[in-house]
Every structure is written in structure tokens, then in C-alpha cells.
Image (cartoon, rainbow over all chains, first blue to last red; front, side, top):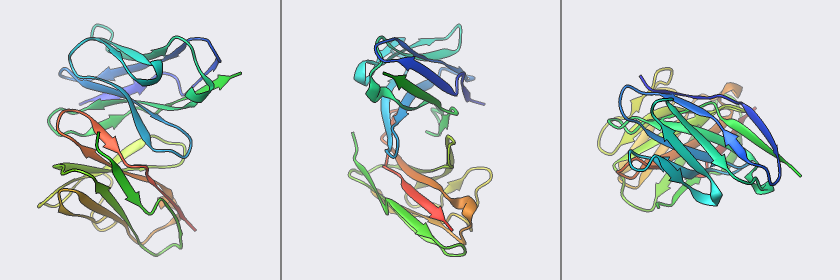
Length: 113
Length: 113
């Protein structure tokens, strides 16, 4: 069975400082992993995805994530937070044979001025 | 990327009534998915809708409560039947565009009084 765990329910950073949102996954085979962002009262937007190509994945808005099989992790990072990054972030694993997505519980990112 | 729209964007309903949510994709897709996001929670898959066959429901969701139609390759509806306040949630549809990536509609925000 596949699962995903977001290690922090809430992360608070100051504007201009680095962002780290942590995600661990469990999968019996090589997974496809995603990060989605949900701004208040908005839909879900895909930030980036890993599908067994390069382990360091670059996404939109300066975000990137590194797939580490040995650690079963897929942490999301950004060098410098912006106020507009404040949102809910979801780490997601996909079942390759059914297409179903399994969502983590989400991490709320707060960016302080 | 596909454009996915949902109608209505939000609604306030009385308990005991039903609401049908529409999801339109701007290209033909094989698989469509319906998710529920309860207040302050992550997304939970309700069912997978394939054109020409009955929807496949996840554990805890039943067809009588959440009937789904998939009349063609670009459209699907989800009905929330005999609503109670516990059904107050955001309902999202998504489309699986081959590959591994799902794109989401903007969501329907439902409040049941």
C-alpha cells in the first residue's frame, strides 16, 4: 500500500528566508510524487512532479524537490520565501496502475514580513 | 495542460436536499476523479469515473449517497444526495491526462444548513 506523510502541519518562516516542507512516502514500487499548492479559496495547482527521471525536480515559482529513495523522502524547498507563498501545500503519491492520488495531510506555510 | 471547470463554484443548501456538481474538461480524458475536502482537511478520493462504465467508489463512499455520471469523455457530474451538515466540504474533480499528472478543477464549496 502507498502512503505519504507530511511531517509538519504548520511551518512559519520570515520573508526572504529558506523554506523546507518535509514529506516521506511509502510505496512498494518506484512511485510518482507530486507537490500541489492550494491558496486560500483557490483550486489546487501543480508545483512539480517526480516520475523517475532526474531526482532533483524544479517546479514553478522557484520551488524544487529532491527525491531520495534511501530516505523515502521528497522534501520541498525554496531558497527565499515570498509573501505570496503563504498557502497550503500537499505532498501526493500516485498509484501507477490506477491513477489514484493519495494526499498527505497538508502543511500550512505562513510567511511573516 | 487541460482546463477544468466546475459548476456551481459554491452553494448553500438545506439539509435533505441534493446538489449536482458538474465538471467539464476541455479535452477528452479517459479517467476523471472526484475528491472531497472537508474543512481544514486534506483531499479524499470519492470515486473514479470512466466513460461507459459505472464509477468505482472508495471505501466509505457509496453510490446512493454520491451518484456519478460520465456520459462522455469531457464531462462528469457528482450528486451529493440527501445532504446533511456533515456534507459541507469542497468537492473537486480532476482529470488524468495519461502520463502521471492530474489537473484539478477550481472546486465547489458546499455549505449545508
